Length: 87
Image (cartoon, rainbow, N blue to C red):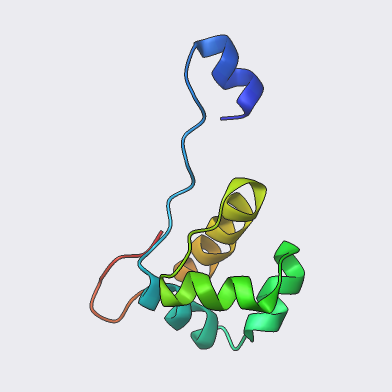
């Protein structure tokens, strides 16, 4: 739901759901992506992606939405082997 639709409905936009940090890293690696590639695609630094995967920081704003979508798409292709948390 877009922010505009949320305003009209009287609801705040729902925060993009993210998997646990270790699953974030697993998804990136299983897709064969580097932190630098993910960072470039989202428009952040490689250090930001590293911090997200380490659980030191959480992405915010548009970066969070884009990162969550990337992880969701990868998770569809590469589900967790144990059926664990994915976006």
